[in-house]
Image (cartoon, rainbow, N blue to C red; front, side):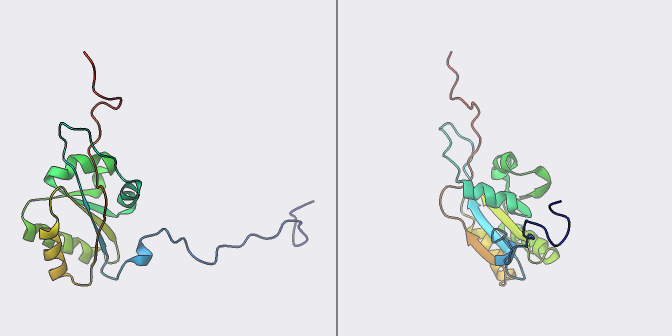
Length: 154
């Protein structure tokens, strides 16, 4: 019978030599990694398209920090238990992010801000200089369409 012992016709399977390169933890520092992305707020115009790379990184993040205006859009893409709302005060929001990284060293987090996230990231980098902060270029998150097939006609 085939597959019964060392004289098998099929070669033994080996594990890969290198671990999967898709994990973000391999590229993170001991302090962690903070990915920063923009967000559009719901409006009258059609929402722009969202880059699949942004959604993939959001799925892989351990936690998603969202400013209050961006929270409804973030909740469309991420589970509610992974989303943490930040208030508008930069110093308080920065300290909250740093405290989370102190409890979870080496983790990956994402910061979603509809405006300029510079006010939060400067506080974070001043309190935790070992943290790797990356800004994702291109279109950020967009709110979902209210009507998936376009506007209703009356």
